[in-house]
Image (cartoon, rainbow, N blue to C red):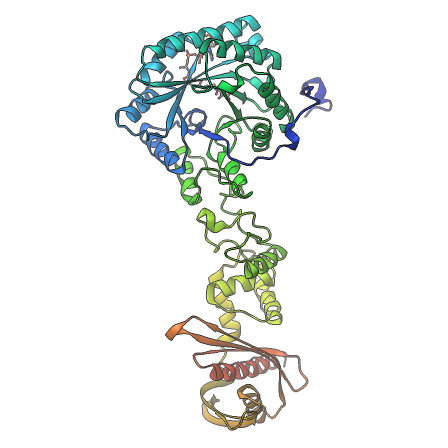
Length: 558
Ligand SMILES: CC(=O)SCCNC(=O)CCNC(=O)[C@H](O)C(C)(C)COP(=O)(O)OP(=O)(O)OC[C@H]1O[C@@H](n2cnc3c(N)ncnc32)[C@H](O)[C@@H]1OP(=O)(O)O
Ligand SMILES: CC(C)C(=O)C(=O)O
């Protein structure tokens, strides 16, 4: 890299628009969307789409709700020409959808373009020519007058040729290519000259599309340019003002949003930002940004994974796992504090109320994404994530101190293996550590007699060192009685510090789970967990489990 990049790169000059209005504007409805996936997106692919792929993509765009779809550049290739013909001949274009095609301002190309549209009910013919100084000097070796004359001439050709096919309802779109690096006064002069020839009316509007063909400035500058055109263009009431941002600086979404605040009625772009170089503006992000503000975008992304698959298969370009709203990882938290907040958010989320789950800007379910991937556990995770998965996968709702203890175990495994621990593995670890412990004592059976409101007698049968034992005691309830019975057996006091229970499942499959924290003698407290269809048996199993775990800890320490 250069030490002094200013010797090579010129700074983009800001626009003098001191009374700009757009910063105070709020977007309160969706713009008109135009998908150019099948044109700008397609022209940027290593392998452009076949007719079949385009057809599948077109149908999916229609299902998503797009009403304007640029389907190709029919004068460029047989594939594009044939695709347009097929759409028309197979009547594949719904009544409320308008197809659009692109052409250069060249007579032969315009003729072929208009020909491709024969029989269309309604069509947008989109003509472009570059207007910026670099293009004038380097590519066209002409001056402003030459560029303007080309735009005017091309418009006349289109007007004349489309008039010969009066059964089609024609809409004309003009783009001063490289608008955002064109002198504003000159861009307006060319656009005004074009609209003067086409003569749009408020009832039969034309589209003026102002592209950031290469994104050159911060989005506020693009917004200034759009507001200036919006305020100064002639025949504004007969014009649909459209924007077409590219993403060279990575700010196309912001540029499009500010441009809508600045007066744009319409946005052209591609799904997930496919398109030339760094891509066109991403229409999925734009639409879902609106959705997350409570504004319906008029596009349906309720099966976002299917949309992503369609785009990946058609373009052969993967969508980044961190792509807003659609990436594989964007509704996933690995880190402990995020998981903790998400878990608490889900616990209090009112299904009918405003969405307020921390770290999740929208409800994944609205986009057809499951909650399964919301929390994933690795060495960066804490108790919140571990207990969330344990609850989600197996229904266990651990008390807080047990969450802390168990998450340390999971973290140790994750640290040692150096990888993610999935939900099934977490459940297996939990069962191994807390449920599948039946030595030295194995529960065989139990009976609890409530002798009075304050007293219960627990009789417990146990298997111990290949013998069947029977222990019994009286306590204030089944838990207290079971603790006393086990205390007698191991000849040490067993005190219950904490007790929790809950149900898992429903109907005939319902089970109770009990968690006890017990202290045996003066040693450190241990947890015991018991699960059974009968709640008293679940509590007794939890005490036995705690005694076993204590005994195993002591054996390991010895
Ligand atoms: C910003 C954008 O995305 S614009 C869309 C770009 N998309 C595409 O180019 C994809 C489809 N294009 C193609 O397949 C080809 O370019 C074709 C078939 C349309 C034309 O191919 P060719 O005739 O071989 O010419 P090529 O594309 O090289 O065009 C260059 C010539 O067209 C002229 N030209 C380029 N754009 C335009 C335009 N918008 N209006 C008028 N003339 C133009 C150039 O000045 C150049 O003229 P020259 O030969 O006199 O120097
Ligand atoms: C044809 C125009 C709108 C274009 O694709 C661009 O400028 O990027």
